[in-house]
Amino acid sequence: MRLFSYIIELRWVGRWIMGVSITHLVFTFIMFPAHVAFIFTRGFFDTGVANAEIGNTVWFFFFGIPLFLVGYMIDRDEKKTVMPPFQEVILISLVCMTALGILLIPASGFWLMTPAIFGFYLKNKSANDNWN
Image (cartoon, helix red, strand yellow):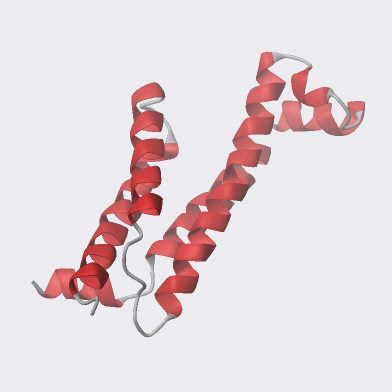
């Protein structure tokens, strides 16, 4: 029971998601240096559709941006004295995105979202239970 209290009280879920997002953005340049170089040398206009590999690189990079925003919003709520209740839409969206990502690409980093989802579920459940 102390572990659950510890998970609920600490401010970590949003930071975890932002960390995954930043890792995603940085890894774009590590995993796809030739594709990034192609985009920079050819100019930005219309290079995202030059071929499938370039398109994948662009999507890989851009996926990190909304993920960062979600992490930021959750972190903003975690800063509050009382976590806002009824955040099931965000929770279900994260679960669906992560489950679909794991099913489609099992060898991907989507697994990194599972601790944050578990923590966010516990925080949301606690906030719902304590709502007046």
